[in-house]
Length: 255
Ligand SMILES: Nc1ncnc2c1ncn2[C@@H]1O[C@H](COP(=O)(O)OP(=O)(O)OP(=O)(O)O)[C@@H](O)[C@H]1O
Ligand SMILES: [Mg+2]
Image (cartoon, rainbow, N blue to C red; front, side, top):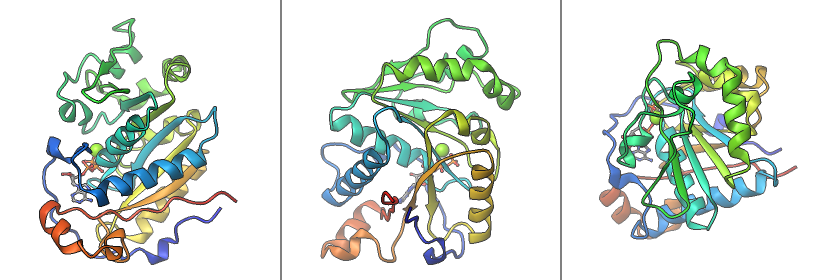
């Protein structure tokens, strides 16, 4: 499998990161270059996932690398292609999906894991085909909840109902929640934000994921200026100025 060459990542100093806004979600009016970047991620992911493989977590080594933005927008891109998508917010440290979709954070995943609700409190979003399971009441010890057999049961229950399930998770170098579920899902997409994290930390995070049996589907190089898509477009300056976004991405090709 030709994975993204981590040595090519330009890993330098930290950048100031803005706070989230709903306008970061992909819409029909998003600029062509952004839409195309997510469509390309969609195509690559679909290629990586065969029919019965559909549960994918998005993670990164550190905070603020773009896991949530990527997870949600990839979900929207899939939904726009007519796929029935569920986004699960599993980030009990910094849950965000409910804010983007303007729904309550609980009841949600943790309430069902803890046996406080029988139903899975899934909400429809304003996007056709896109559903979200919010985080729920934040428990004192998320790992214990995630370790329970209830998580496996929920995932198995949902597999039959959705074409793809995307899980937003916390950064692995900060909390290890994803390691607990890594072998219960079909793959992990690893987001790396350019210039914000050291190569060593990225490598350690990947090692920890692989040790617990995670299948790393690919890497997304987020907020990349270097040899990003933008260099292919003469409108680069205009778009960067307006949106402050660049997307570099790389998902592996099949062997
Ligand atoms: N490519 C990008 N260009 C500009 N801003 C971005 C980009 N990707 C993410 N951001 C912004 O960076 C911030 C962090 O992004 P996001 O919440 O997706 O990261 P995260 O990895 O989920 O963070 P956390 O670890 O806190 O959950 C957000 O304000 C988001 O809008
Ligand atoms: Mg996040």
